[in-house]
Length: 267
Image 1: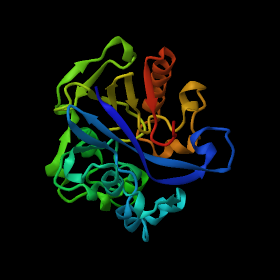
Image 2: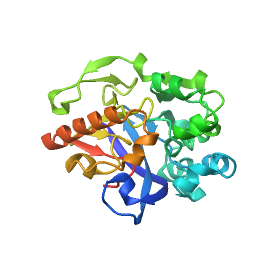
Image 3: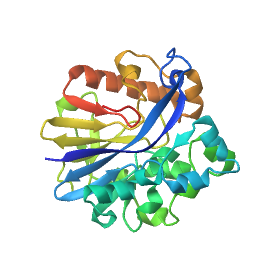
Image 4: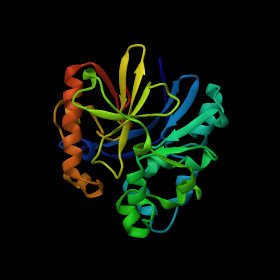
């Protein structure tokens, strides 16, 4: 069965109440977590976290506002290419990078992983690929961190085999089989937070695990229905879809048959 290895490549800070309404204005750290997936003798990286490419792209000009709104703390030693090497996996060993969505904290290190497939929502990529300036900033998209050959390397999950999910994964109904994973990694739409936002269901020895990315910022969002600040909806793709996805996570969590992992809350 598949294995999941968790890493952290930097963090951002903002008021706790942005993630959980009513949590107060104390500044909290939100880690940028990445997951190395191991299945069928292959490796895939789920998101890249921050990297110097992101820091360079947001150092000045319009996109400096990104880091003013959500200050970022990142040390080059945290770059995923280096952490993977220390773990014993070289960049060339990866079968691809899975991108949950195109916000800067999830794609900041893509340029460190050349010549390999970028696996993402094709619809999401088409929605953001031409965004520039203020329109890109409002979507949390930093064009400068994208590799120039993204169009040639991108594999759209919608083109993969679509399968029905087992009852353990209800209310999620269907997913896309990641090629060469022998069905141990399934990609699933989790819409609302960002264009093309998706997660990965991973079949491990102890059952299914859902890498839910930013479908929630905190478990309190779906367990206690403590929603994010209304201000957060300004940068979301569709707030109604985000709430629907939260409802699905709430049901999934209540059934207790799938372990849910969030990108910005450890544990």
